[in-house]
Length: 78
Image (cartoon, rainbow, N blue to C red; front, side, top):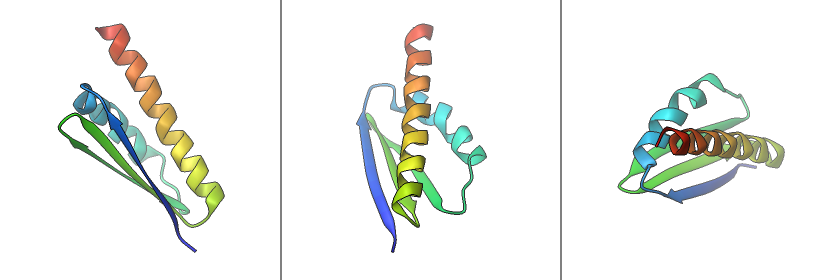
């Protein structure tokens, strides 16, 4: 069975967050999950796919932690 979710974050910092998070996602490669990140005007869109529910949860949590940390860094920088 294949599991997936889609996370859409609307923010004026979508480009900055994309640039900050993308390299980190390449470092966290997993055999059980895949993350596709894209940016559109004012939106950061992530598609998370996994082989099982636990892998989906772990990959989603990891992605959200990276986004939250990057967002905090952007706020501090401003």
